[in-house]
Image 1 (cartoon, helix red, strand yellow):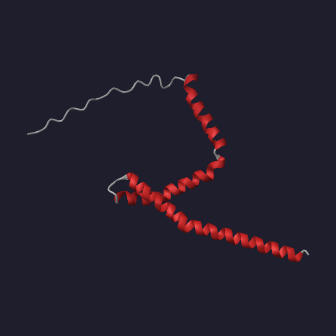
Image 2 (cartoon, one colour; image 1 turned 120 degrees about the vertical axis):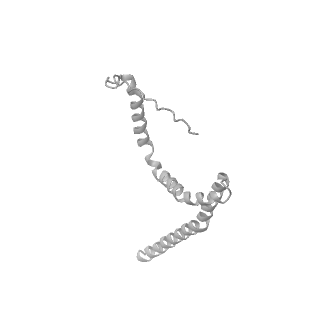
Image 3 (cartoon, helix red, strand yellow; image 1 turned 60 degrees about the horizontal axis):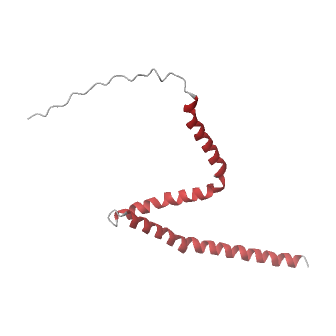
Length: 123
């Protein structure tokens, strides 16, 4: 038994007579508002570029881990997100924390050695 295929309806071409008309001043208000907000953001956001880029970097680097963890708890997004967050915090505490502490300690030692050398050269 053959299933009938419905005939395609042919639509009329769109009426484009209004497209050539100049834009009224009221229709430019959203564009002006969008430009004003864009300039305001460009003025306010520069102090936060480092934080924004750091957050974007962490989000991009943690996405593969999150997607891998998402398969493990049977598509439970909250559990996968919590596991990814815990993994990043553990990485920060176990790796980045000691590196920062060692760097701070080395800088303090260099400063104290520099002070001792300066005191010896200028009696």
